Image (cartoon, rainbow, N blue to C red; front, top):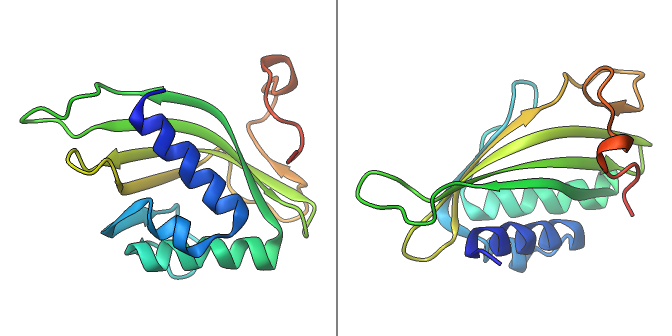
Length: 150
């Protein structure tokens, strides 16, 4: 498995466990997690803030995440490029009975392999009264996407 994919999977396992120490260990100390408008306190700056944010989500919302797809850019950062990856995910908010689908763009430190930046993009704006925020009329089941958090 590619080192970037392994790091992303390690990060998601730490998110799902609500494990602060394991989350911090996935990031450079100055990492940044960007979000679409509307999330209080965004962006989350620093490994500590990112870890605390996801622990809060697990404890408060019953959050669990599934990885749907991973795309990897060139493995070597080279003089001009930074190692990157893109994933598609689902965020299951079990205590609310809702879910949100989206993508994230990852950048990694070439020396350590740690995550330096995440840019999150939501499939649709979070809407009140909608159980699962996702693309309209997209065939999630037919394409093998998770239809629940388990």
